[in-house]
Amino acid sequence: MATRDDRVWGGYSTVILASDVPRANTPAGGYGDPSLPPNHREMPPLFLAECDEPLGSGVPDMRGTWKTVSLEINGEPAPSDHRVMEHVERIEQAGLRVTFTSAGVIHDFYACDGTYENAMQDVMALDFTTPAVFSATFDDGVLVFRGEDALAGITIRRWLEGKQLVWEFSTAWTARMERI
Image: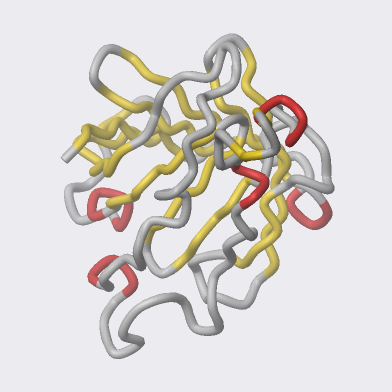
């Protein structure tokens, strides 16, 4: 991860680092109009829009807005009305930071360095109150989340395959998403 000393020239900052932007978290009750289902709420503005720190070495570019196009459970196609089939998310990245915005939640991995300090410490979209803590790393082009505290043992993986983003949620299911 870049440091302030890496980006100063003549006393003036040349790059806005991911660490210059305050951590984002899900507001109470989730973002957007609470009278709407979470998947139909308007997303807040970009959090890392002003950040121009380049992606870290070996970090795949997953930035953009993605929508689920297929879902498998135990290797079989899931029913078309499964809730994950409605999933739309926005991914922002800078340096080692990754922010996911979707379904009322804002999951901000301050730095995907495997530490608890920089882990996503937020709430689940399920009810906007259940704590969710995941550390993350980039392992050979795969973004790997590892559950902490009550979620220990849960591993979530995301990687690019061609133009699709693959989202493997532990042993529960695997979704394929495309940019929209």
